[in-house]
Image 1: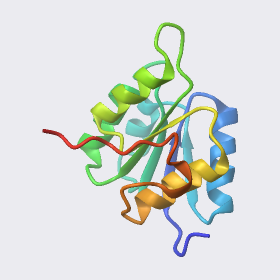
Image 2: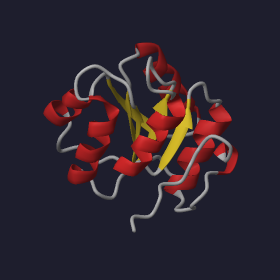
Image 3: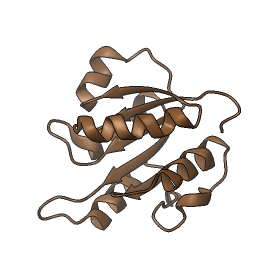
Image 4: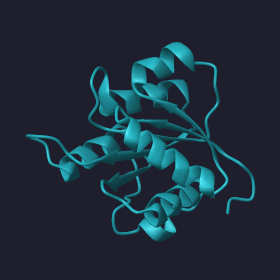
Length: 145
């Protein structure tokens, strides 16, 4: 259980994924806010401070890759976990690598377990480089050369 409540934004075009991730995070003491698109974040939540963002890579509109870059511009200190199941021509591994290059701190391939998600979240929020329960699927962001 988290010692202090952290504010986490979940961005995914799937209401099912948003709800499931939000419930997982809430069970571990985090406050969540959900958005179905990156665009809504910048129109409705521009003045909100987040500790962490969980963002899907493939969404209509701006999508997660560009969204990560925009989030980094507006909230440079926020932690970002990119999630993806891949889509059509791009597999999830390529998508997750692209997210890391854009600035995601960690990546999780869908489907992931609650233990993997919470391990990644707690690892990032505590300042650890690796997220305990998510070692196999979560990847730390590469340092820029």
